[in-house]
Amino acid sequence: MNDILSSFIVFEGLDGSGKSTQARILANRLEQSTGGKVVLTAEPTDRPIGALVRSVLRHQVCTTSRALALLYAADRSDHLFNAEDGIAGLLDRGRVVISDRYFYSSLSYQGVTEDMSWLRSINDYPHPQYVIFVDTPAAECMKRIDSRGEEKELFDRIDYLERVRSNFNIVFETLPDGVEFLKVDGMEPVEVQADRIASFVSL
Image (cartoon, rainbow, N blue to C red; front, side, top):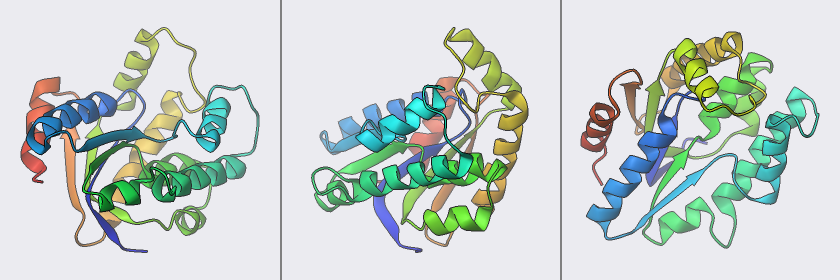
């Protein structure tokens, strides 16, 4: 599926890259320019399937890598097409939707252990209009994760994150025409990144 969803913006990056911060900043800026028509969301979601994914990431539930990939894909389907407040419906109602992660994360994270073509087959979802990749070295991401003082999640290991970062770069080489892509240096000051992103997005 190469459909592209207008007014849908996706932030991607490693855990600790700063993407969530940038997603919030952009959402706040667009709130002012659109009169409050912005919805900020994230994957995994807070819905029941997403909650199960998070329990796996937090080592509360043990499952296989393939089962986790399927759970991510199922959560994403609900995130997109839920009749009450799915992304597709919000866009149809004139909202701008910003998502902290999308299926590019599944391809990059699960792609370390699973076949990429299989992952693409279970994540055959529409692309967003904008993809913003906050590219931060894995070593820096691990420093930021450690500074949180929280228990590390399933993928929070420098060797794994380095492979994920490589996968992200490969995945973004194959974006279809019509998707607008921006790579931001996650080592730059937060406001410098935010200004670049705001200039890139024109809605």
